Image 1 (cartoon, protein in one colour):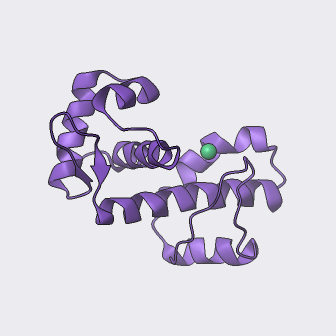
Image 2 (cartoon, helix red, strand yellow):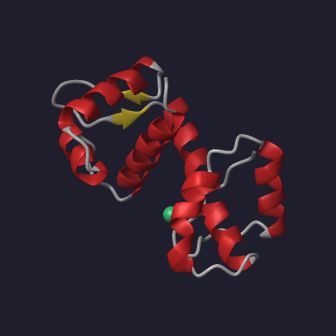
Length: 136
Ligand SMILES: [Zn+2]
């Protein structure tokens, strides 16, 4: 896949929709992501081929267990970084989302373990969303 960021973005958005109990379809994703239905369909095909999603005609798109684990990790990274930026670096919560979008793509598990430690295993991000409990 040429663009890991794009893949991560889809997984995060699907995770968010799943958590809020919404059914996940090409048209829902096309709306929330602001991209065409054909780009969404193409990406869903790739994510199915990677065994991250299950998709069948007329059924809601679902995570495989592997896909859900990966999505939880990405969401945890994002929310930990947002918490770190506010708690440790004194950023305004309004301004942390875009920075977190960039930093969350760091791979190093040691980095995220350290962030968790410094936040004393905080459970809620600055926007009030729960931080998934992930072992990096
Ligand atoms: Zn955010």
